[in-house]
Amino acid sequence: MTAIAPGTLPKSSPRGSAARARLLRGLLPALSLALVLIAIAWLNPRAISYFGFNLMLNLAIPIALATIAQMFVIAGNELDLSIGTFVGFVGCVTATWLRDAPLLGIFVLIGSIGVYALLGALIHLRNLPSIVVTLGMSFVWQGLAILVLPKPGGKAPDWLLAIMSFKPPYVPFPILAALLIAAVVHFGLMRTSYGVILRGSGGNAAALRRAGWSLLRTKIVLFALTGLFGVLSGMALIGITTSADANIGNGYTLLSIAGVILGGGEFVGGRVSPIGAVLGALTLALAASPLLTFMHIPPDWQVAANGAILIIVLAARVLISRKER
Image (cartoon, rainbow, N blue to C red):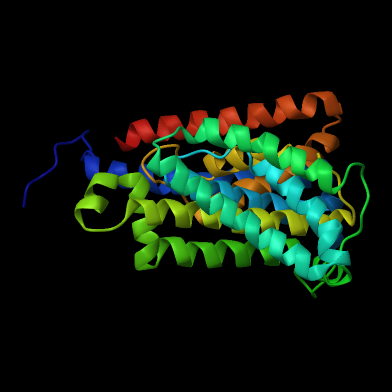
């Protein structure tokens, strides 16, 4: 047995340090959310209650769904700059046609998911930059939303209002919905064989092609999933606000990108985390209004404060990633 010289300590192995860095990197979204909750509890303890969480997380569900929608695109090394206006278009359809002419509303929403799938095919076949294509589509969705609902109004369907106003005992509905969204998407994307293929299209497209899988099909599926969760986000938003506006979802584009990145996702490499994305969306929902309001920050500065929070978290992640390498 080798003796250790007095005054010296065995150095930790590089593998152990990297494992701790990976663990800390994975826990960073949860730590960010915990810090925001601690700050809210310190500033206003009464907010940490059943009623308080229902009020603070009122808009967390549509933000989480939009973040998941963006996450599918980012998993394929793409970016969607139209998800916000698409959510607004879905909201206008939900508050008008889906209520007054349900069959027409359902047909339009399913067709919009098909349009997203066609966008994925177009981007792949013509090798077009997704930023440019989706930026152009953002104007299309905005124009269609104005045609459907020229001025704010409409009303959410009664069944949608009932779903979004559901109040289960003990645990607030937004928290239950967030847990369900995270669990379903995590299982489908991270625990199934086809989920590995979808992530592989962004992680190593060449290897996926050599294995015989169609990159065109994976791109279509990823964009179709983006459209599906964008539809769910728009419907959930109208179920909360009860009426619609063509500009109601414009801010969701940047929120969804920030939520994915805050949750541990990266723009390249197919590295995404459904659970982290939902946690990032909850963090943004809490920091966007309750925390900054309790800190008496003027509304004009709240967007800047959100950006500062995101920069701080990203800086911490860069330091952790350096240690991991």
